[in-house]
Length: 539
Image 1: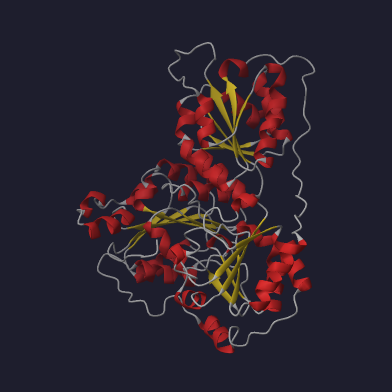
Image 2 (image 1 turned 90 degrees about the vertical axis):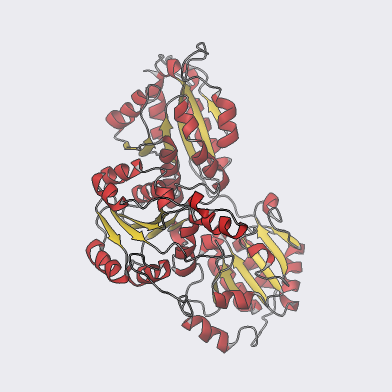
């Protein structure tokens, strides 16, 4: 047995059945062995960065390990942004990277991969010898799960082809175990109960980390007379509750914003409380902030808080409910507020106007709200365009059905994350929102989408510009033409790469396109030419 075969055995032993990547000298035999001997599905991307993003999207939607592979030198170098995104999102991901022979420093593809991997992924596991290969794979998967983040498993090309000695050490596969819930300190529980008892206008704000605790937080809100809200990444968690304010943050809707402005206590559960969640201090300016989190380093790290409770969201909510006498707040939890929340229309009061050849993006999103299937995975890329679906479209984030990979602020993420999400959850259609500038950084992945054949609707909101830069340049007196580009027929490009595509310039055309596209049975692209002068201020 050769080392690449031993690595394949060890990878499959960890339950891996899908790998994303690009072939090269240093990994092609490993990929061939995974496919031919083990039946692993290999999704061949056109760019290494996109391959790692696909593995990240797969992991985020399935809860399983994301696995990708790239070749030596430039193969790893190109994947740096994707590894950094996965690191900041704490995605359990293993990237198997080839490397040049240690004894050949003049190799054309040589560079020092370890410091690069540490600067991007954060964790580097080298395959040391032929005899330790299977053990080293186990170490990489263990690190990805226990350190919660991406790991570069480094395999020199000459070592990959070496013979494995008989009876090498074989580690037990990494079996994920649910962590034991962290119980809060009773003194912290009593202090939080006192704050809820004495506050006048409390709000409980849940993030993605509190999804398993939704019922306990809802019960605590009812017991304490608090209103409920979520971060964008936990949107829809309290849907159906009469006092659910929806998303709190820079993308809060007007009614939510007005209500949160009056809060005097905001308690966050498993939420990445940061400048966006607080809208730079404008969202709940007079509130005392208390953060509940299992990570002590996360409490107050990105936005100042008055107090922190170290504990599992569900355990803490239940413990506080147990010591809190029910509190009734008819003025805060008023029947008028419940009625207003039930009747709220995110499009009310907007001055929506399409023009010849260009649809108002808000008009298009309104049609999306009417026509898109409720049971879907929604992916929103990075750019000015992303403000519209996030502000106006109800996209539930429960059950891993919402991806906004904004951790590193990198454009070009929407399409590859959508491919990974669709491969991971093929029973659920994917709707991905991208911008023209963002898509043009990785057009080749349209070919990947066509080959995969997954039900992905790519909605391309095209303003023929880098919209965020235009919005920022003009007020400073700088010529925004620097960030504008000629119009291109991106629907024709998509069709040339095997993806059915429609161009949308008005509301009638949008509805006609949805008539043809839905129900979604495979890949499709809507090239939506939007008005470039409609600005999303809170992006």
